[in-house]
Image (cartoon, rainbow, N blue to C red; front, top):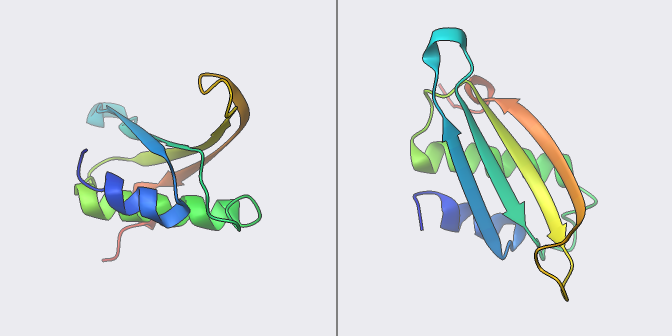
Length: 102
């Protein structure tokens, strides 16, 4: 498990997390993709945007990734019978600078 993943998983009761990093500082396109699977927190899908922001902030701080330009958080629900099949997905994009306490 990478730095920050355990903390983020705990926020929404997620069963699995994937992260992908793309670094290109020459044109502000450095980004992180954070995929959060099958959250168990009851209010997750009612308060999704705020929880996605909290997960993004926690991940940036824990993984010390403040030098990235943006982070995109995907909240994904899969079929319990066929885990490879997505039944719901939403995504939120945040500028990393807006998440970092100065």
